[in-house]
Image (cartoon, rainbow, N blue to C red; front, top):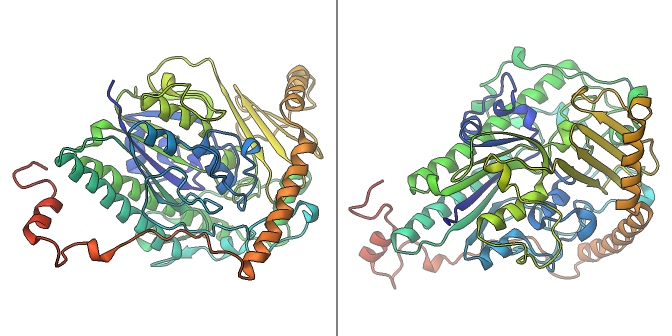
Length: 509
């Protein structure tokens, strides 16, 4: 069986609803759209935690965040947790991470053989929430409405600086794999190129801003405060959406910039796909486009992520490559499903993982076969809630539970905008009761809350100690030895020129 190369192109905070591939009427995403046209589009793919680091740790490990204590953006990702990078390297793959993965802790590799950029965010415990003071804002790093009000156009931002570096280094790494193959080294590879866009701040470069006009940007429907569930109200208060008024012009400008940044990310997808063509690997590579979570972007009056509504919790998942049947997969699935999928593709089996795996392989769906499983599980244990929040998406139904809040049940087939909570609807009484019983059986919420608070207390103390100078910083610095780069005195110039030329002289492009 041919083992494909694997390339994951990950966006940050990309709701699938804002791409052409998923039906947005004005989004300019030609490269993502073309990938979807020749591959499998998953229409009910979810993150397992609607926040950056927890979602990414679940993606990497194939495990739910409650199993590995990956609660928030300052939770350590333990070195003892195996990732798909470990497994793929064991199976003979060359592995590489370019871009953001928000690893927290001293292990900044987590199985990747190569890591070619630093991260964009801190790798220590400074961003630890406090559930014992859950109503208190941490202004240094909590979201607020400033990023909406300050949205617009700029030639450069720290985010464009970062994503341009990710593109450049990822392309160069892929070209090196072409050079390897030309030299007779044909090991399959796995590259994760993870970009920060379209994550806020909503500031776009003119080239992409000009793809849109104000008249093309719709205004989402906000809900009266009385119609919001308690969790949503806590999030709105935490991000200051209840105290800072937004004008229609500000909302439109933020959404225009977001769409522009989606197009910017799409351009990065195009650049990586073009490089795969240039090294003659496009037909032997499974390409995945996905994200760590979505963005409410004003829907219901909410912004950013941190809830289990569709715009926040759903992610794009588009897969194209050898053995993938073009089509649409309606089954609910989640990012934890990618680890067992990759292990399957690489020729591993269920005996390989060195720990529990909460996901399932998506190979049957990729090949156009039926899958009896139609389920995604979500957990949220971070800021703006004092208790864990759980989600079960099964078939068309979505159930959301938090011990201190009334339950929520939505029938997405009848109510795709999630406007009607069916939890107290007599017609849904049996299914609501079954979901409630399943939550009680699956999770010990009080015990989980106690563990969250325990780790928060320890991490805040450690963050203070590190701020005072204890220990070395964990922020990753890519290794580089300039004495071995390009042409140096100990090298033979013609040999370097011949080795670095791709395709080799006499070869074809």
